[in-house]
Image (cartoon, rainbow, N blue to C red; front, side):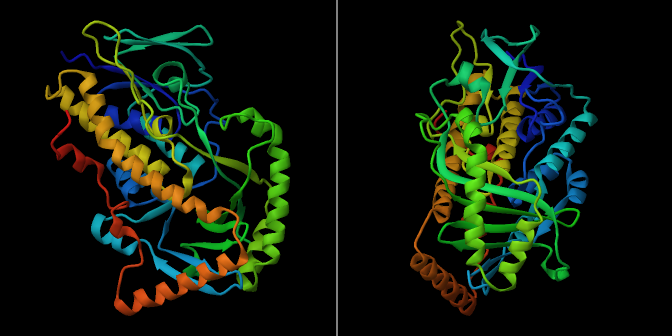
Length: 439
């Protein structure tokens, strides 16, 4: 029996905001968002990359005209050697645009959140801040969430969109699953550009692989530059669990100082105009942030079957709360947006009577998403290894290999964009047309 009307969304970040917009827009539901942090800190973060598979979803959410002025359309990546020479220039947009209509965007996280908040206003979606979840009661026909301020709310569906350290996951869905530290951390900053660069270079990503990590830059809207130094960093001493944010808080200043020291030594080894430019960016940075990169182990639950007789599960995890991957595949936001679109499509089938229970909806969501999440996890793990410590000899060999492959591929007219593997061409809505073989 169809009983879906109100939806509680825990988490006011990109996943929760996008889910609220889509469910109001496409499913005509009544979402309400509860966010732990206040509006001044709920949009923290650096710069994000969103490939074509995610950009296409932002367009379907009717956010294109809001997003575009606050983002940068990236056309290519440029890989530099430590000597300062260019090893490769790879077009990452043309093929995707030709085949999907969309390319690769960079946007500051705070701007993305603001754009999504603006999108919720169109549907008059309420957002409540400073709301800490203390309990969740799934009764099979409804779900009630209680907050630390004594208030509570009840709906027919609750979505846990509250990130990798999800309270919904810890309290209700899968308390045994905890984030795992990837071994890689980064320091980063967003600064005003320090030189008048060639206008043709304002839409490029730049990077250098060094023996002690990866240096990279990306343009932001407003003529700003995002730079980061990603390297291998051990867990704080004395911690027994990878998911110890207090441990990082206690050691954050030390790790930040150590990373700055490492970065200074690395910059001394990067030469040419590229090395000089990096040094200028770092010297101009005032607010430098330290981020340890975590992921969730594969295989965790995304929903908990209901204990109520003839009841359906009413709580589902989405985005990083369900399947956070380390950021080295560049697909974090896009994966969350795919979750949103797929769930909306499955709920539309439920609303049309094609599914009889939310348990069926959640089960199919789980089966359709697992292979995709595993694939992106593998890419992220492989790319993350490029940030680990390695010998100068290994870096030199990789530089030559990349240079040789670039010229071989150019000679044979092969694609260098990397989109042929389907990761950025993927359209999650096509999954809705596939038969559910395991259902």
